[in-house]
Image (cartoon, rainbow, N blue to C red; front, side, top):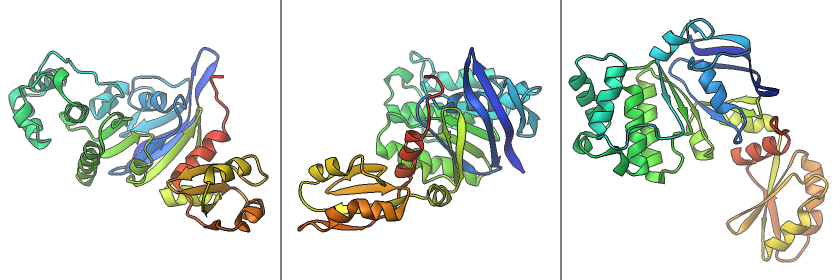
Amino acid sequence: MNAIDVHDLVKRFGDKTVVDHVSMQVAEGEIVGFLGPNGSGKTTTIRIMCGLLTPDEGEGRVLGHDIRREGLRIKREVGYMTQKFSFYEDLTIAENLEFVARLYGLKPVATHVADTLADLGMTSRKNQLAGTLSGGWKQRLALAACIMHKPRLLLLDEPTAGVDPKARREFWDEIHRLAHGGLTVLVSTHYMDEAERCHRISYISYGRMLATGTVDQVIADAGLTTFVVHGERLDRIADRLKGRDGVAQVAPFGTTLHVVGPDPERLKAALADIAAEPGIRVEPGQTSLEDVFIQFMSGSRDNMA
């Protein structure tokens, strides 16, 4: 059964179409990454699916509830973590969780708070003011508040922006633990390593859904070829390659240069004179999700322009 099953969602603000006939299916217990550039419609789509916005067009069900008529029921069964830390900074961790528990009518409040603190390893910090927390601990508090009422679906809007790699790793370990327990997760992110930790990804660009599948499927379907250039003064080679027929992207990666294009033969031809130079080595490379992400962005038109 699908936790999310929506079709042809459209949302306009004035004369701007922010979500343009978006369809998405997410199975129960699945972790799906929602990718796209800033302003692409990710947040608006998430808000439609959690019952905060009503679509102008389109239909669908979330957790079996109609997104048009049963928004209140959806809200009760969804945990939504926004981009911005949205808790009271002059209250302690425990006091913030008590507030959330009362909003959801959870009883007894003290038991729910204690269990949530213990579950996410926050008991020792329960009396610390939220405003004094580091980015990683603020993120953990936000996650604790989202899962306290035992939601069936977790919607995370760029949850790890601004936190260090260790905190991101711990956060994702927690997400996978929750998914193993049956929770469904839809998470928007700009981090390619995070997208690769999802079961599937969906890529939206300026309101339109461009790709859906596993990371390997999305990379394969993009049809890009990558070559890696080794040698000296790669900055000069990069300048020479930019704009050549068959070359879509040129990007430095450490001491190498990654050259990407949609047609392998045209790309080889564009690199032929470079490969013939002494001290330069050109070899086939692995197309990355970031390469695909950049290619999608370069081929899309900003719907707010």
